[in-house]
Image (cartoon, rainbow, N blue to C red; front, side, top):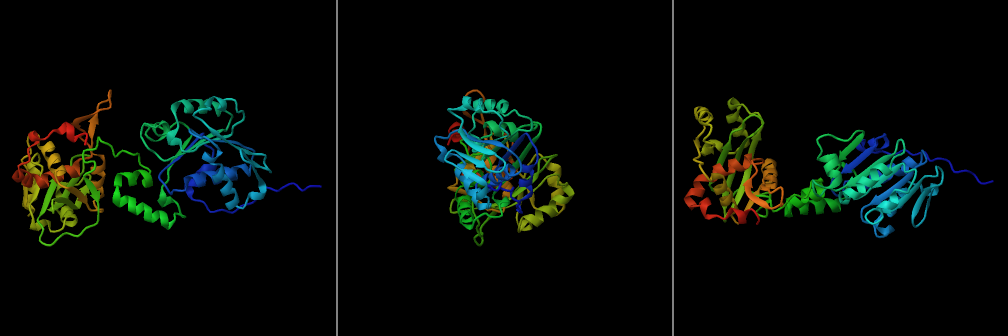
Length: 413
């Protein structure tokens, strides 16, 4: 008489975010960058779930020409790694749990979405590479996975904020009911390999926008709409001796931060070496905060927004050498053109707020045509305003004039 296989008993250490995968949610959306281990974690959770109850798990992706394009090999490999091979039957097209009678099947969605409708009894639907999921496929999946307690899982590396599931679960104002949404990156993977660490750091130095997309799970937004696209990079550097430094200050208001910058020009490259950024910084505390953050501040003059004469006067009484900038019509565009005129803008990696602004400061897009306009979005620009103030006197001496620049062509460079 053949002995019936016993259910396996496992003792596995898993992170807290992965524990949530074993709790009942209608939607489970795990997103993030490369090396996070999210697909491995989801595969493990589904494999272990089949060890406790009978499941029908559909593993789908928008584009799947053959079983090789599916997560079949990933699930097979994780079954082996978990020491569960004796409990599963793995064939070319399916994977079955011999104890619980659970089954994994694998489907491409783009050309076969109507065939999904005929699959009865789906308990779990895992959408891999869900950033490519079309709205048509999504509208079919939701009503098809309809049994009581059934769940829809998705793993994705975000590309665009308009992608179907990013729009519904991440960019949304309010999550759909009964949803678990978690961002997972390489920092959350205790098994992140050194070879990927080296690759990640190389990408970070070479193209920070691409790094944020690939490794930090951000949308790929390094687009032509960005004001400073292609003119800046992040780098550690030491200041040359006796270089002349420029200091700029943009006073905060309400939720807008106070932002100050130290920069210098060397070999026709603009270097941004230090920043001081804080929200809700009281004027009484501003001088001490700037002094802590900006080296040699008391040896230099800092140039500040002329719209706040009372704040400038207060800082002078505290002993700071501070002067108002002139600004005026076209000064923002003048400053942008001047910053872009350098061979390169190099931002020290410690200046995280400045880096974020250079990444996100953008021109508006026409909502009808999608064309990039020459209208600046008044957002993500506080450090950049401080940078313009720091450079204003240098810019005027160089004779940079906004009227001589074709801003429409600048917006599409």
